[in-house]
Image (cartoon, rainbow, N blue to C red; front, side):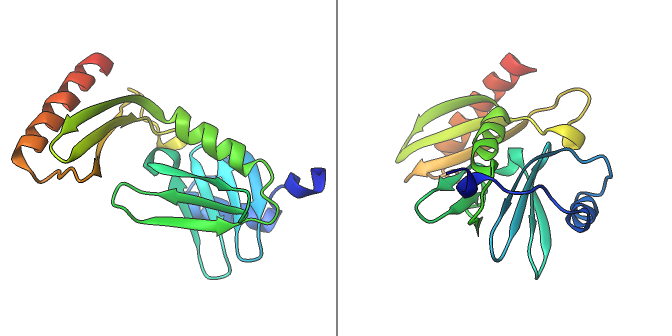
Length: 171
């Protein structure tokens, strides 16, 4: 069983690539997972994805939904704009646990606002590590669910009012 999840940490060459993607040297690695096409390294600020084609990073607070599917050995993550990405990791290491914990920890506050056609989830997210600001600024997002339409004036007004109320509670 241990061979299923255990993986060696990033190599020195991989760490050079991680530092280049992130733009700073003092990187703290939390977990590392490996697949045939990608190596995923969890750091304080988010995920770094290394492939033969490109290297990229995504901050924890930018991920609105995602998770680990053990049946397909796939880590997936989605962004507010509806786009997403995934990585197949035959040796996931502690990536699934760290992913779940860090995405959850980035959420400071949520509120669901019932609107015509469904609801809107408002979330206050806190950037981590080097991405954090000294005053602890919260990034506020709104995600329409079901058939809710953020372009609807009534919906927009309800969401703005609820967001303002949350900001007052948290700032």
